[in-house]
Length: 131
Image (cartoon, rainbow, N blue to C red; front, side, top):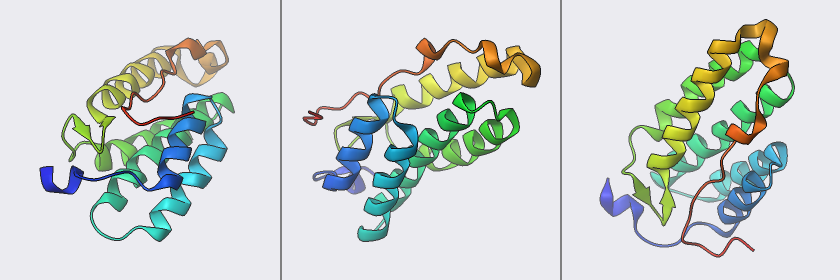
């Protein structure tokens, strides 16, 4: 899998991560999906995992508990297979951040989701210029 982590991210994936880090989860999903469509090879699965992380967070912001839990599972299915750092993106930290978010929404439950502390949405760390 390490060889699948060499090289640069697709520019649309970099833009998607930038948008994710700004809390623009719907827009991040759109950019990552466009990168997924254009890319070939295993890296598409990395983009799939990140875009589903964005959708998980979007569901939380919209108060959709069941959607968040469901898409979290799909996202982690894709993200678990990657090393901690891939294409300069800290996938290990993203997985940890998502686990923390899931634990909190499960603690709150569907009725308490409106009390979710959005400061738990951490940016995706990357060595790419996201500006």
